Image 1 (cartoon, rainbow, N blue to C red):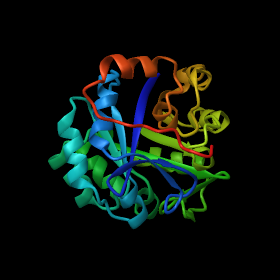
Image 2: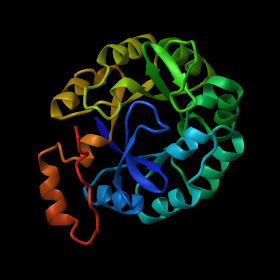
Image 3: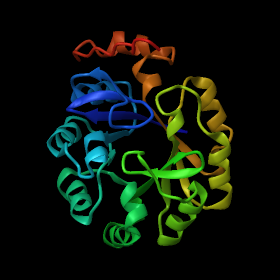
Length: 256
């Protein structure tokens, strides 16, 4: 099971996402670059970056910052948030060197874009983000319902040639309530997709639950809050022994 740290960027800062993107965020750190360097020192093999400004506004906002992060570390990075057209995806892949581009809303509103990107760059470079609320896919920064179930949407994307999705239940994002195991199993057993689980991870027990269904094709997990708030026992030691040269403060979110 590959663990992928998440860096959510809003207003050039690292934030914690709550349910709904526009106002429901908590600040973590001033420097996304320093956070990326920290995760690299902790020996993670890849990172996921979400441009929340892009997801909210419908167009990617943080190209220079994402480019700086990519240049600062030597591991592959996948990026999503506001990728709504071919030109944006092309810039990310060809100019920024993004390992994988994550398409969300655009896959719902413009399936032909998905086919075009696969034709140009192959399915290995394109990932579909499926965000669910109450068994309905949500879009446009989790604001609007798409009136399609996660399973039906996953099948539709597979028919277009997609090989991998990122699935998350947005009601679990940022609140440590655990992954939606039942939905993951449903999608995995009715498709041949590789699946990255996102949202809700709290501790090793959640990772163990995912490991038990890894053979279904659920081979990776994205983690945000639990990593930032040192909920895995080795983290504090790693950060004290290996990361003294990185100026970074990751305070616990108050009131939770």
